[in-house]
Length: 451
Image: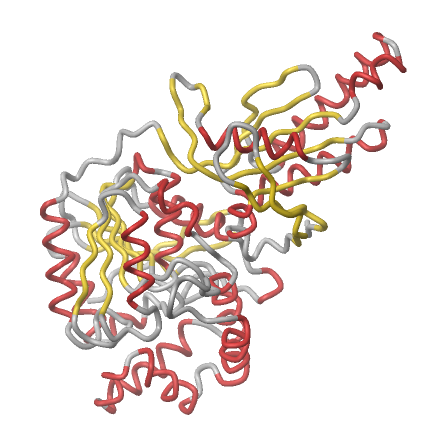
């Protein structure tokens, strides 16, 4: 009998999920672009893989937004990665899972890694299979695709997704073992059609193309296992090796085979490694006070001059209006006010797109007062000690804000790399030294945003 399907909504979008088994520990699977919870149980290799994982524990599966039984979307309304991370949290909350191991597959590895970095207290261990840290392959990391290769593939998806010819052509490099079995070919064709429409498949994969998680890998502080098949052409082995090298204490395992789906080919070796790792895991989430966070700093440009020009009483009234506007913008975008000093604000957000949008909104809405804001946004490691927020990520955010000009929102390259799907448009603002911070930093200014 197939497991029942449940739904939970996040920001109005219906997310389909299943809970299989009743063991003492939880395992959540962040599946990539091919996912349909109903049809997965019709595919023997897929169903067997999931049932094996569920045998001694509770297995939580979801169709991420845009795929399977969850609400679909088009390229025009694809969400940023931070929304996909919050979808995971919504499903885990609905399933009653306070702590879980997470298994990421394909581009789902990006979402899984970001969740583990942002919510270490909820993750007992992180397992990544067929992972690569950036959609657009960096020049110093072999195996990645460039812009031209991506656009060629995305065009083929738009024109051929779900057709027999397209599916067979892509199986040659994604899962060549499937081509040895006519029944499996038919299952794979049906799986593609039922997982997504051509537009939603393109939209999901464009998020992967424009996402780069390299800068956040050192902020992951949960036990991590990275699994890669030596002949994987979809996500070459260099990507998994790189990820493991940047996460403290991560274990990297090369497995035989050339199939990107873990239930195709030698599934036993994949399952054995996962089970061994989970059996040795302490089953306790991280108690670290450090985590991935997004910070926003703002202040008023030339505030001293404006105060002298207007006089104390008028300036005080204007500051009060400014504070109302800032607090309203922070609340509207899901942020949390941490502190104020004079005309400056410090807030944190669950994701970088929300913080950048908040900054743009605030700068626009204070302009009728005759004021201009400068703002800086950064996503990086922050520390929480006795409810106080600090750490190098906070320092970097403050330094970026100090470099911004009138009505300018500057962000770090990490923010830009994590906002794929947000419809935010950035302009290169060059490299800068940040006082008290090592190295030089590539910054970007937000030049437009969709609401």
